Amino acid sequence: CYAIAEKLGPSVRVTEEIVGEDLDAKGYGGVYGVGKAATCPPRLIVLEYTPPDSEEKDDIETVALIGKGIVYDTGGLSLKPKTGMPGMKSDMCGAAGLLGGFVSAAMIGVSKRLHLVLCLAENAIGPLAVRNDDVLTMHSGKTVEINNSDAEGRLVLADGVSHATTYFDKLDLVVDMATLTGAQLIATGKKHAGVLTNTAELEQRAVAAGLQSGDLCYPLLYAPELLVSEFDSKVADMKNSVKDRGNAQTSCAGHFIEEHLNASYEGGWMHVDMAGPSTKNERSTGYGVGFVLSLLGAKEF
Image (cartoon, rainbow, N blue to C red; front, side, top):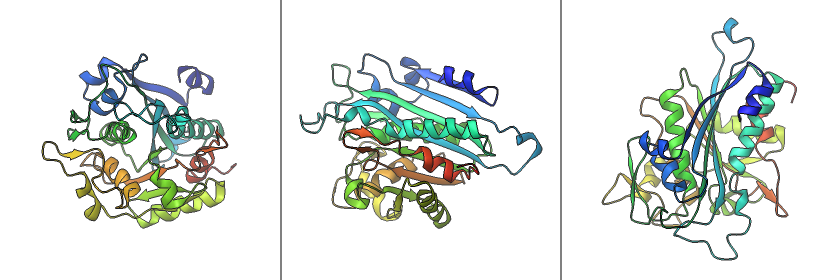
């Protein structure tokens, strides 16, 4: 990331990198809990892009891009089976797609202020791995009872969106992207990501960006008042996995992340679950780069 920032020039800089035990000390219980058993420690990296004309304009949209970067996913102590684990090197496609979109937007010079938050960890198995029944304290201050260590992506993204909505000034839109659930393929298929937004206007903007870029998406059910009870816990603010896997679980996973937006944040939120379109024939597709450019209104795209 530092090399990328240096190559892109003064408009891009790395503003923060929190690694390993420092994540625990600073309250990032989701990222730390997921990645603490791995040989390479977890980290949260933040990059910032400031457009050249930003000082001349007061109405430039500020967007935060939050990427799930699980560099390998064993499932943790909720261990994946031998047929389910191969290919999990691609569980970082959300972060990769947003990084590609961020870099491309900076090279083009889009007229948006951008923040990129990469939530990076390996969900490894070992003596230090988070256990089912553990309770994590997240960056949002909320507590999460682990009932499925293989539902780890939402934990790192929860810390990411909390960071963004707590520390970024004049934030208008938060976009998180992830290979989050296998249920996304059931909900919207292998070609379309599932998109969950807190306004109808953002939903339409996402669909339009998908059609323009070819990174297709389709709306998911948005109903937090009906679905967040799936995470009810007797010992924490919530569990990390649903009790009924037949009740719109892809939407539920998105709503889990939404629960960790800072309470003071009043802007837009868009969740993109791109588990299906992220890969094809055992290779990554690059989903997300075009979507980001279209979403940001890149004229050259």
